[in-house]
Each structure stands twice: as C-alpha cells, then as structure tokens.
Amino acid sequence: MNHNIWDPLHECLERKDLERLQLERLRSTLERVAKVPCYKDKFAASGISPGDIHSLDDMAKLPFTTKEDLRQNYPYGMFAVPMRDVVRIHSSSGTTGKPTVVGYSRKDLDDWSGLVARFMTAAGVLPDDIVHIAFGYGLFTGAFGLHYGAELIGSAVIPMSGGNTERQIMILKDYEATALVCTPSYALTLADRIQKMGHDPRTYLSLKVGLFGGEPWSEELRREIEERLSIVATDNYGLSEIVGPGVAGECLCKKGMHIFEDHFIPEIIDPETGKVLPEGEKGELVLTNIVQEAIPLIRYRTRDITRLHYDKCDCGRTMVRMEKTMGRSDDMLIIKGVNVFPTQIEEVLFQVEGCEPHYQLIVEREGTLDTLEVQVEVNENIFFDEMRKQRAFVEMLEKRLATNIGLHAKIKLVEPSAMPRHEGKANRIIDKRNK
Ligand code: DLL
Image (cartoon, rainbow, N blue to C red; front, side, top):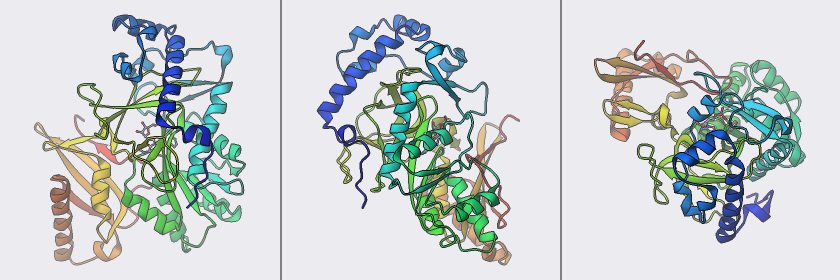
C-alpha cells in the first residue's frame, strides 16, 4: 500500500492540535466575513458577533449559509476581498436558475492546488504519472482544480477537456496516460467505447489509477470500473462554493474520503431541523471554510447526505473520513412514502448478473403519489431471451428493490447500448411530475 502523504504536518495532526488550529482560523475568518453585508446582516439577526465564538462547540450558534444567499448576492456580493485581489472566477454546474459564482485570490489558488495535490497523492499519483484530465475546462472547477494539483505534484498533465470520446481514447492510448481524471459515469462511457472499438479495455491503455468525482457513485460502480479498466479507482469530493475538488478524497485504504479539516470544518446536521447530529449519524454535510480569502462561507449547507468517521485510518492521516455520499437531499425521491437515493437503486441493480451499469429513473405523479420506473440496460442474453424468462428477470429485480430498500418501482429492461452515455456528470433522474 502507498502511504505517501503530501503534507504530513497538517494531514497527520493530533486532534487537539487540529482543533486548536481550526478555532484560531475560524475566529480570524469570522472577523473577515463580518464585513460582508450578507454576514453582517445574518450575524445581527442572530444576535451574534465573531467575538462570541470561544470554542468549536459555539459554532452551532452561527447562522447557516445557503445557495439562496449566493443567488441573492449574485454575482460578487459574497466576496470578502476587493476585486483587485481576485485572480480567478468559477461557478457551479447548476442547471437551474443563476449559477453560483466563486472567486479565488492568488493565495486561494495556491492553497487549492495544495489541497488537490493531497488527495491525488493519497490516491497514489506520483511525479512520474501522466494524468489525463477529461473534465471540461471552463467555469466548472473540476478540470482546473485537478490540473494544478497534478502539476504541483510534478505529474505530466494532459489537459484533454470533455467530449469527443474516440479522440480521448486515442490520446489516452498514444500518450500512455497512467491516471484518468473524470466523472465515474464518463469512465464507464470510455470503457464501453473501447470495447465497441474492438479492444479489451483492461489491456488497451496504460492506465493504473482513476480519480473520479463530481457526482455520487456506488461501491458496485467502483468495482465495475476497476474490473473493466483494470485500475484502482478512488473517489474525491468537492463543490464549487467551497473551493471545488479538494475538499475531501480517498486514500488507498478506500474507507471514506478524508476531509482536509485544517481548511474546512465539517458538521452533520438534520436537514429538517438544522440541529447538529451526534458523531457517526447520517445527515446533511455542512462545511465552513476557514482558510479561503476571496469567498469564505460559514456553515454552508451542501445538501449532500453522508456520515463522518473519526476512527483511525491505516494510512496515517488523522483527518476525518466522510462516507461516499448517498446523493443530495434534493435528489432524494419519495416513492410511495419510501425515501430513496439513486445510488441505493444503483447498488441493487448492479449486484445482478446481466444488468449493465446504465440506468435512468423516470418519476411521474399519479394523483398525489409519486411513481418510479427504473429503466436499466441489460445484456443481449437477457434482452433477447424468451418473454417468460424476461418477465421472471423483471420480477426478480422488482422484488430485490422491494426487499433491499423497500422501494416499489416498475422495472423496464432496455436493450444493450440504448441508454444515453454521459460525458460529464450523469443525469439519471427524468422528472415528469407537474409537467
Ligand atoms: O462537482 C466539484 C468537483 C469536481 C468535485 C470534480 C470533484 C471532482 P459542483 O459542480 O459545484 O462542483 O457540484 C458539487 O457535486 O455538492 C455533490 O452533490 C456532487 N459531488 C461532487 N463530488 C462528489 C462525489 C464539483 N465524489 C456537487 N460524490 C456536490 C458524490 C459529489 N457527489
């Protein structure tokens, strides 16, 4: 196992030293953001001032920040530094409404590269690696974030950007890339296309590792990608509002993503009540940025559902680990009273021989109830099997969904290769409610 650590001084801090550092950084960040009109108003409304925060437990007294705050202060209203100190602008990949805009000072960019170098090192990337970046370069934080992190490590970066899958495969092959950076769904798209081109994806490329993030994915999908591309696949997490990629990433122990707590303070709250939940419970991740200069956010509600683990990791890092997120609370479906995330359905489907890792969820409304049709691609043997056997297969899947997650959904089998393939983040929910 590779136990390389990029920044041992910070990544391996004793908890009491880490908490001292966090409190110090939090207090100085609060002093800085208190001048931002939105925070000035929020602090006044909750009758709190930065000087009232004497311990990390006092954080619960601070107001939350939400995407709505960023929207209301669009584009630059939440910035805590003058524009002359801003050297880069990115924004969220949000598809509804105005995007959320984030800025970086020179120091923020350096810090960001350092954070990405940490999780890339944790995932086994070394200076002699050739890193192929298939995230789209642009306002999205994915490509630039990974790009500068990999360069900082000293790897050779191929800034491929997204799209044009056959050309991607040619470059991957000819330039002998050893590390692949993209969304997990795009890794599958690549594997499929290589196969379609008549090659064996396990041996066609020189890839050793894949660093995947930007969207939720199940352990089953990880196994599928690892097998099909013959690589070690790790998960990394971030959101544009809080730096972008580099908030958290898995080490090779693959037991959750280490959150870089010297930069971010994580909390888990009940999404309904906003109350902080006890250690180990599942809830919404809330992050406070304690280092950023340009746009430090206080108690930002990520809407991502996860759980934190504080027990020791074999890699030597002391930073808390977050479980793979189940998805965003706004992606949670409530089907006939059962709360369900797409990744839970994915997990059940992919355990079944014959189901391909491509699926879509069609949500409709009948009267007051939401109904779900799960469309899943199956292999040729199943799709072209006699009707009776196909029906039995559908029933078996429906039963598994019901027993494993209590979900009553209709299954529809889709013929091989018919499901849309994704180039960036996968969009698996087709919502036909209220349309
Ligand atoms: O997706 C930043 C990023 C880029 C992270 C590349 C990792 C790699 P946004 O476009 O603002 O930023 O989307 C952020 O994507 O709140 C999660 O819901 C989801 N997300 C990101 N990474 C993961 C992950 C980037 N590893 C939103 N697992 C977040 C699950 C993820 N969901």
